[in-house]
Length: 274
Image (cartoon, rainbow, N blue to C red; front, side, top):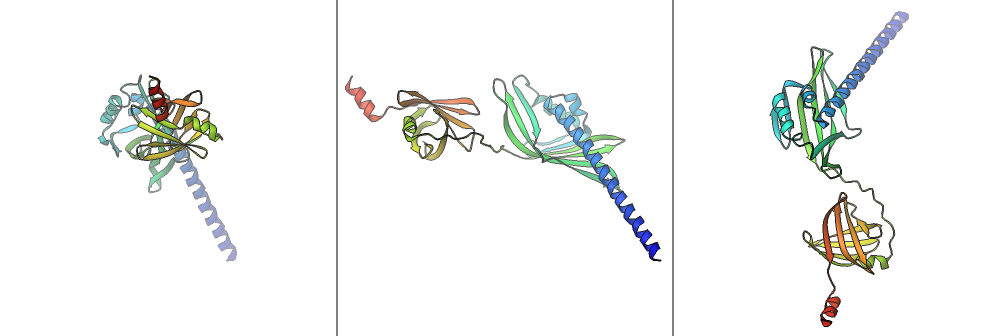
């Protein structure tokens, strides 16, 4: 009797283990398939290959966007791409990039048979305009419903949501700079956009005041300072021992030039010599 029970237990254990292994193998195959299709789909998106793009969807696909509303049907969805993101490829390009480690695949079953899958994660949208460097302009979440019909996988529902700015990661390193060098940049600067920027020395860097807002910038090298919270740099042109101009750049692109204002003593001195 004990031998019969032991044999039954072993047989049951082997059956359960075998079933679990098969399910895991099937899930991995499914994940590999969906990830492959996902890569091919986004490749067609990034390259505006609209014929391939349309082939990944069911005819009645539903696309939900938290900023742009609802688009129903593959024809309208493809037209929105043609007339929107792909309308001016010579001057504007968008490249989608998945956030590493965020993408996951979930199987859908009925009666233990796979009929679909959900893939979800986060992705970044990089923009390149003519004459400018590519820059990360947006971050969002996505959820796609893939359905298997007659041996063919197609996307039936697409959700694009929680669009937000890409968090800035500062990769610059501040250097030590003496007080005597920092004093060269102190003063007031006037520009067409910012108005007056007052610059003062602080420990390890400079403080900039625009209106009622004050923030600190740090030296990356002589004559160049950076903001830690945003990709903004402030370069200075120096004549003698005093800066005469401030150049403001964002993401490496110059956005404003400000002229140093003369101090009252210099103005008075100049007036006396006239």
